[in-house]
Length: 599
Ligand code: PEP
Ligand code: MG
Image (tube, rainbow, N blue to C red):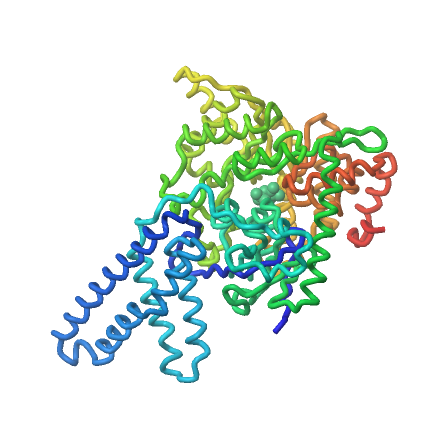
């Protein structure tokens, strides 16, 4: 039966494919594809874990048998017996094998996927006793996952080749005729950490949907950087969709259609082809300089998460990197069996790769910004519901709380600056004391390298304006820094007191709120007055709805995901800033700027 689920649109386009459910479990499990030749190893890992858990349960059963009825109630023995049965059940083990062999999921992913499949069967049972066995099954799977910890294989560098939706043959109106392996895959999850998302970035999903999240949550940002249709905040999507269901993701309107009828499939197949044509048209702008009708040069920079993203940035026509979110080098390392934090050499090599990838164009490296919705280990911060992590130890606060870690990063960046133009960007500053401390640590890192006789380069140092307090004390910021970069994602969150990752208040997360626009406008104006560089690197910079307004406010440097560059360039090429200035001031004064923007 066809039905639709509504959420928030994150990344444009249409994806049609089979659902891959990624189930959240109480244990943090890694999800990655293995190489075909690793299937036996993964099956063995499950088998060994199963044998170990069976032995563990046998020992428990034996000790229970020795206890008297007062110490060990009869139910306990029965429960252990049930766990043994579930552990050996062919539905569980056979299913796990299926996901490993047919889908090349790693063992943990296969196990949690099969758990979800079987748990749903339990949910549908009439008999209450049997329905309650679901909890036992979950416990058995958790025991297995615990046993498998530390035995994970190394990630497959090249995940199995699958078609992305856009790669379907044009004439193939009904993609559901693809065989199961060849069909594009669409990722559905309750929640995904940015670290998990990064794992999936290396794979070939055609689209993705989560139950939770806001449009500028970091998970959504990584999804956008994958340039595949995505919807977040789809509430119960992961409950309603089953493994392997055919789904359509409409990233333009934020809708997912489950089990589409042939007519709906044909309609979306048409939309998909229209989108591909539009992309083709835009790609002709790649080598055109971004200059407005009145001759104003505009710098279109890329936001990247990993050094290798620089390749896509160059391809998209970026003239530099305006934001390298370096924290992604620090995330998801446990799943890859790497050291908890990257050391100086590893970071240096990564920054150097980004610089080299940009072929002489400048790279702005933002120092680590973990915390809030970007935990290091992929564990959801939602677990700490009593705290507000967005207001906690995040970004520069985290760095200043761990100077050794921060100095390591600073040294690595300064060393990489010997290979090309690097700008150092500091996130989430608000206090002059933080500014002074940060800058003295930069000096200290430089002195350390001098003392060690290590080659390093000069960097311009800039600050992100993403807390209203910073936007209201620009004079201080401009006294200390060479340039500013406006992080509108957080500036909106902190100005409006709306958690950017919380879908339940997403309707109030408003980039066009007059207070937000005022802070953005004042920052641009003050930088221009003082002749300092200013750019916007939040999602607003890549949203074509705001291009003309930002140009009218005097912005000449925009940083965004490579996939957004050409659409923004098209707006720039059509703009006449002499006409936009007065209009932009009018939008600023409007009671409802969003309405004024479209006029
Ligand atoms: C921002 O806050 O706008 C920004 C670019 O930084 P991040 O999205 O990584 O918090
Ligand atoms: Mg930010």
